[in-house]
Length: 474
Ligand code: ASP
Ligand code: MG
Image (cartoon, rainbow, N blue to C red; front, side, top):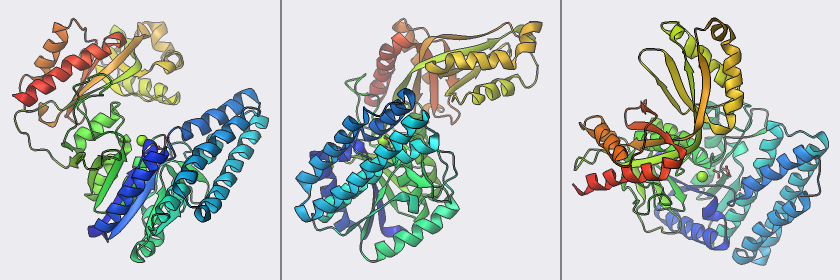
């Protein structure tokens, strides 16, 4: 099966309008002629997951249900307008009826949340999953309208997870059995399964989600367990770019990127693929490609196991994560005290905050890491509590959070072997008068991260991007 199976995943903007879904259908149609077995994974229409979660949270907060009617109407029109353009009457009526039922679920669940005044993670997953449950029906029917033998499937039948709602972890062994049992017979019968991204279910059948943006991960999971030969992620840009084109107009698409480079980029804020996507495909040795639904003839970016360095092009791409703060724990009494880091990160973890950046001075007199800005008060409180004794004794002088900062990450597999790269990066920033507050070498050795003041983000990204372009030309 694996040699001839392709999985393609469409993101929200790739199915979010009549034009987009029309293009997605054309792509599915063409690829179904080129590949013996094709599996389609889809996101919700763009903006729908946001809408569902926003309205549910509002119901919880206000205890009001009056805003829900407008939301229901919007859910209906967004799907209806696509159905009207792409589906003939006989297909449209049953699909819209099912979508209307799902909107009814949304309404009931949200009203219950308004009464309870609380939205549990489990309830939020039930609501968030509705976006994909609607889009999958629409996309599958739009394909059938073009004569394709598609079959809509909810991934709660295929992907089994634990019960960490809103960020569920798949059980690969159980998923392998389930996914093959459902998908293989369909593929053998020449059908094209169209599967919801983003969602799974516990062994008891309760719907979970894999985390925001998790449809890419769904495609990778299915690719790994079937297995497939290739997973292609269709999005609204030509592939992985050297920088965010909104910050750097000269940014260009990379023809090739290594898995490790891609995971660093995804982790450090490049929104092309969900960071969890990479691991299952590497482990299963599956090809990965990022393509553009709106420019399907463009080859996109090919993700490869190892990139052979050419032209000394060591720096590949630069990203920025804004809205962070640096937290510093400092004190001369920390020197050599075991367990400070463990307790610090334990305290941060207890607040449910993730830490994208860590650095420690070798003197062990301070530990410094970044957290999302919005969490800083809670994190500082947790740390002060964890270190009450040390603070009272004066072993730790203080625990504090900086102003808002940005983490700039430069990625490139050849960086390690290329002398002077770090020097060039620092000179480029120095020439622009940009102060670097902290640095860290990426754990996977293909990236360097620097902390700069938030207001320097754009200038820093542009200055570093000029090095990428210069390198490319050299
Ligand atoms: N619809 C989900 C979200 O917006 C999953 C995805 O699009 O990947 O987070
Ligand atoms: Mg996405």
